[in-house]
Length: 358
Figure 1 (cartoon, one colour):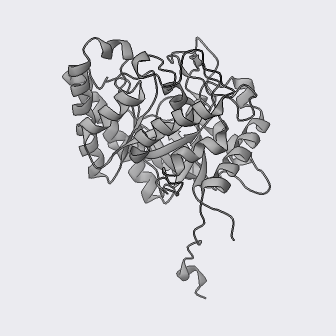
Figure 2 (cartoon, rainbow, N blue to C red):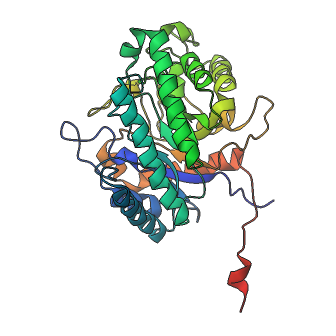
């Protein structure tokens, strides 16, 4: 049997920004993130690509349409030079909360359009064969809780408008399942939000580090699944809990992050506390990364869903000394390869017949 070559294996560039800044650690430049990703190797296998956060100082979506196109062309050239592809993009929607004023919600939708424009150029340049655009509500759980019914309606309306814009570009939007976003801060509220949006190009972005916190009911205790004072040595209870949330959210899942979590929350810089991302080799990690990835990548009968063409590692808020250690990325790549071996598939390489002529 040939070795699995799908899903493709990606690293994220935004951990060079998220949680960094003047009140934390220096931002790691975009070029450095590309270099560290491209240099990683395990048994002759390398990362296939990167997912991008479309926000300063890595990428600037301000300015005119021509400014955005020039920025995208520059990124396309840089990525191609490292023999990498681009997958999913994170829209910088935090200046306009999805449940904010009319003007704020218009800003949210405008940033989705700008992200679609950026992604369109990458597709035209041949470096983005797959991937979605990721969004969140840009609103806190505390503000959502002040009026859950009406705030949920506003989030759904904003997401619907964003989906309509994305559809013009043939793009799908993935709502990030993370406990720090209002209306998305528990597995049940996440399902309710997706159902309310009810658009064919609206899906879910699952990150194993964040969705583990759904089981513990952080920021929404009424949806807790694991018992208080849960004994983590009892894998059977964790397994059943993972089955509950994956059965509920897997049908929506169109973007997936492989990750580890130690069952704690963490925030740095300006980022709110959310599920702590741990190293793939962290002995305190509560997940069996390879096994538990299967709950998302396989259906309830154990069959591959093939719902995502690539998987991504998100090392948000890792300390800079960890991120600048090449062994960190080698270890992560090794784990990603194991996930693909366990839950991937093989597709024949497409050969361009014109290139064989002459």
